[in-house]
Length: 168
Image (cartoon, rainbow, N blue to C red; front, side, top):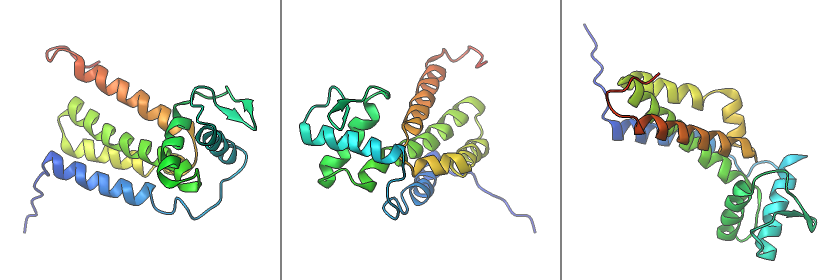
């Protein structure tokens, strides 16, 4: 008896990856306190942005905090606005969303470059289940958002090349 596996259409594959990523990255965002030293400090920056309505210059304890770019703090503040305060979930949501976007971008870029759905799905699954990536997706980290934005720029670069140009 020969088993045949039919390829998934792209929307189905993306939906499965999205569901898998949500289960991995969004489960238990609220089950632990913010861990020192970075998580409480980053949450405090967003909390001060939320309370002072000053989104231009990040602050910690009313002192300017210019060590990190403000994009992550802005996203924390936006989720804090929706939740009423910058708590564990609001602080970790930007990392989880960035990780989810990262696996979907990995699928898309791999499928675009190699025209093979199996390699695209495996690439996204390998990234999603990599220990460090999974850990950083549930931790208040600027790196997760940064790496996803770098991946997005690489994806935009490759997809903007003329079709007959080699992808090397």
